[in-house]
Length: 332
Image (cartoon, rainbow, N blue to C red; front, side, top):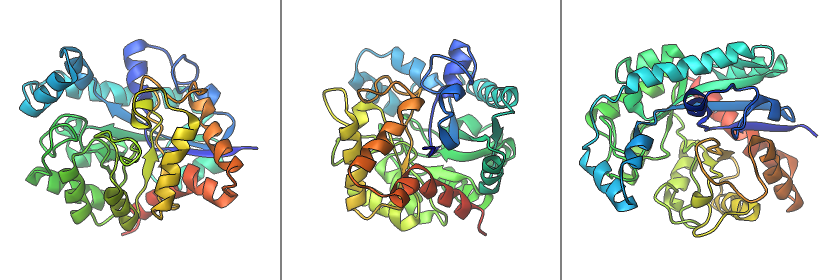
């Protein structure tokens, strides 16, 4: 059986840039040769600057990391624009290198075209809007960016993060509105609760939390409260289930059953049409027991099927809900 799989977030581009290798075959979480059993396979590839990761490496504790994020004492240039440009080159170079099996997509129509051609579909995303300050939201759109995570874990010129707190700035409000007009999906993973509610209030299009779980089941700052998930339902968006163990369960490595619990909790809130998969592969250290990478995401489908979830529900979680959001972004 071929399983459809549309994933809303991965960090594979940065691993290729930093560690070398290629998208088709590698030792990372995601390699195209290990996605052949997904039909179709659609992946949002995030451009994530490791400025924050390098900054975090300079700190000696979690509290020091939080304090320094709040203080903003790491704000100089760091070559972040050069790295963003390098990440986009990796994206388009790797897609071109594998053009017989994958194509870049900028719309739901493009995704449908890729499916008809029996190719995988690749969508360009940005994690941290500070990366596009130089080219602006219009420049990002022209480059092919279709998903924008407004912050990572530190504050930027547009919004506060889940670490720093604080909501949208005036520039952030302009960014969110213009993104909606252009058809770029706003992503609230990593955003503060204040930023989340600001975006929920002013967005006229569906927005997503591309890689966030339930805070009720795992009380991590990166996860969503029930009220936040209900707001995503109201907006017609999705929350992508994150496979990072620390966002699934506290204090131990997660299991697939622990992961299913997050899906079922969101289902209980009325979210059957608002759950997706945003596995955060190549952006997390530990994923559930028995899983090694993209090839094993099908285990979640199989576990849900054993719990008697039916084909339509499974299809929605793994593909239908997210493609609906992309189609909604094309509506004027």
